Length: 350
Image (cartoon, rainbow, N blue to C red; front, side):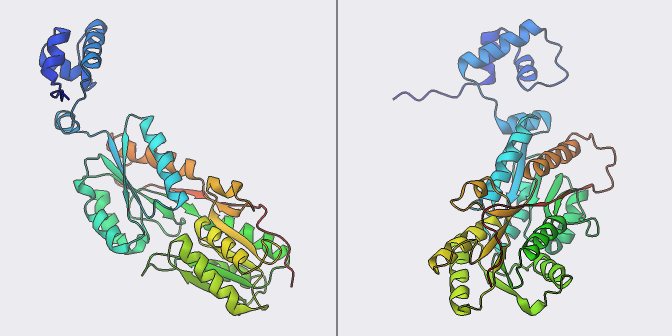
């Protein structure tokens, strides 16, 4: 088998009958090209015929850009993050950028290592979904004044500004709608499934849920916080053990920290001989596309992932291309969440 030697820029220039630097200017679409439309067409045709692909590193040395964005996410096995990556890739591709995905695999050690190495990626800017913004507060502040533009995604509110450009989901609205709906259906005993990486803080949601229920007269003693690791198997095991330990005095409603752990909880209920939603109502968070197609469709608090990724792409590319109107103040975009009721929630049967 004959291995074809690498096609060089010189070969393209020769075939098109132009100087090497003219071919380079045209192929890298640099704005200082004085070449005619005919010459441009000839160069692109020659590159096509020869199968020439410009080296990313050489292109970056000439233009100062890689035309690539990095994305740091928590867990590629969680359909929320794979959907987010897919949506962000579509959003940046429209603007002529590629996407490189870095997966933390729900390890805080790996997350810190990948975050520290972001500068080594051949990218023009990065989007990060971190496990905890407060743990990275000084890093994010440094990133805002650093050479690599960065946009942080995650949970937040206007009272919790992040020290760098950010696009966040505010869970208060969606959670309140879900609490109102379940309370209305007669649920008075709840469990919150906190499925997290080892050592990761619970975040604000369990406290927010407990407070919202307290405002309706449901005491904190009627809300159990159950912990598992981030995997669907661990969520299923934790909920199975919990339901078996409760006997008939079990809660009638379960809130999960995300849809993946809610699906684990649904399986656990079935393995314990319970019916969803007759014996246990279950609510997830994120509203991944899969939630609408489960045998029992999952009620969930929706994050606007398409809006989030579009806003992140806009913010980041404006920073990369120097098109932002205020370079010295971090921008924050907040999207509300909302509750989507489906078959996994029904009236409480005490």
